[in-house]
Length: 310
Length: 222
Image 1: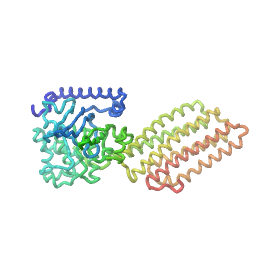
Image 2 (image 1 turned 180 degrees about the vertical axis):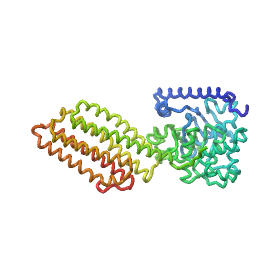
Image 3 (image 1 turned 30 degrees about the horizontal axis):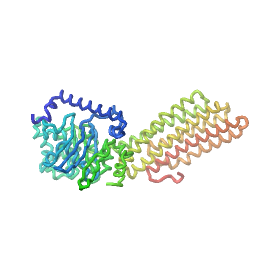
Image 4 (image 1 turned 45 degrees about the horizontal axis):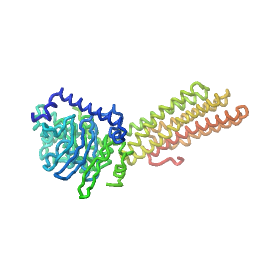
């Protein structure tokens, strides 16, 4: 069952059970959040519990190490379905490291070690029966620099589904994926041309089309617009807004304004410098974006978003 | 399959359109209450005073909801140029509308305090004309928002002279009858006149703010 993320997620019925399990944990955390006197918990839940989308990924006390180096300390937060969650914070705060935990990209770094729970639909992604390739099919990724393959536009999109053994009509899938990425009209007459002939903004939308071609339900974006000009950036943001009707999106950005424009919730990370110079990232505040940018709870957040620190 | 292209800031544009439509909705609610307050006063419908007062609650609710929405858009979307002017103006207009709604309540409360207006044709027709002119000026403000026509604000102050004149007329009529009206009723009538005049001023301010949002300049008489 190597093509399955885990055996019990294989059938629809059981997938639904896992979903219900995820919903149950949402309810439980909401109850905890609203009943707790601790204002952190209340803030973290945000909004009317009945209106909240279900939690799709739950991070529980996540710690990341590179050999002895403690890169990220004790991060817990829920990612909600069909929302855009932004990770912001100064360089070295661990926001990209945490993002990469969500689809096991840190596996590719030999010294990296992830502790704690990363639960996706209630299943621990670091559990013993988990196939990381299947994880990455369901939780796709778009990188900072547009990185299309040195192939045609068509093949860039068809590549993932092909190796995943897609049996349907590939032309339709390519068209559908390019259209969802709002690129179809610009490339429909040159599908056989090299992806490198496209502009940076188009290449990034191609990478988004490639990421969604394998039907993920979560798309991770690591600084997806930082190499683009302002208008291409706004196009990507508009696209993200459209995509969240079908996908859960998590974006890492250096650009706080971008987090404000696109995201529903924002996690602010900061970095502690130990006596020996070791820099460890930690989560400072996780709130609804509108709350974080108007009335942040922590002075540290206020100082960072107003540009006084960081 | 229908295909789509992506327009930058399409979602932001939708948000701005929504704010504008909501301003028109809120203005229409306030206008309805201003007109109602006018009828209640002119026709001495004391039994409807409480209903007019209660109708202000949903206005306040919508005002707060919109104020928060505008505040959040300002914080999150980094508006500039015409977008920035529109949102700053929207916040001011919300205030003008909320105040106008309160003035309608003040008017009917004044009526109740003096247990209705003495049957006097001159007084009643003076109030009738003043309340109608006041509502018309407020409606001009809403029209400016609905059309984003900067011309309305340019002429609003001059147009408002009618309300000012009708207010003076009312004051003259009240002064001439102050002995028979007594102090309390005279003062209440002065206040009502002043409230209607203020509502018209808010209508003028709304239209002038729209002129600023569109042209980046306030009318000279702002």
